[in-house]
Length: 289
Image 1: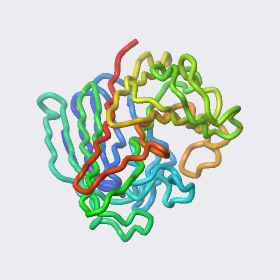
Image 2: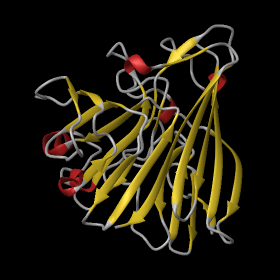
Image 3: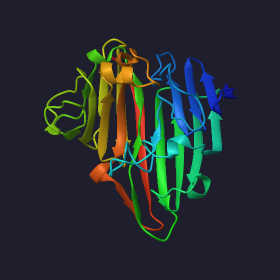
Image 4: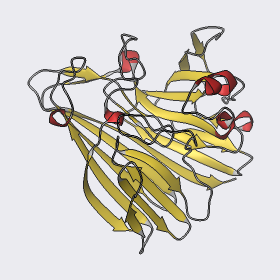
């Protein structure tokens, strides 16, 4: 059953059998997806701030028009203004009672945000969230509505719930080159050999368009993360010290999550001509082991 959220942030929440779906208008931010008969797939921090102007820690934030501090290394707010802005909710297709399907559309354009000296371009962004009982898909399309070309960074910064981050394996990125941004990394540039395992602070940007799979023996499932329009996959876990340093992240919550993000950042930023557009999408599907 679909209902409006009665929380500090407006949005939608739906239940259908054992499935649950949730999205905030703030940032067009997907915050809940539980497949029918399964455990939650999206992770949310118990310390997250649910307030206008503040980011939500967890779920699937939209990063646009820059990623992290941007290519200059000094852009603010981190991950861009889109995740801090209330998007306009559009069409809602609710079939939760018949087949457990819910589709929600959102819109954001340059007229809806305050002047952005760091991104003074005319744009129109649409985000579609497609929930089903066995998958969740997020599509982000950005159109250049101005007269000059521009470039931007973007990511679907998806936080996945896992039984124990120290015991998971992430497959599908073997052989991919990556940028290692974690403090103390042995080399800033490396190549993945075999499956990824989380054994310390992890912050890697992989050059890969491939599907990634999270193998989770504790929860007894595989999370298959397919994507399109994405040149990179970001893998992130804060580990112990960084989790303790973040006010909106519980000290011990890092064991229950890993981020697997579809991205176009740094030298893979998207360039769009006037009238052009770019579509980025990510689909998460669950399989039992």
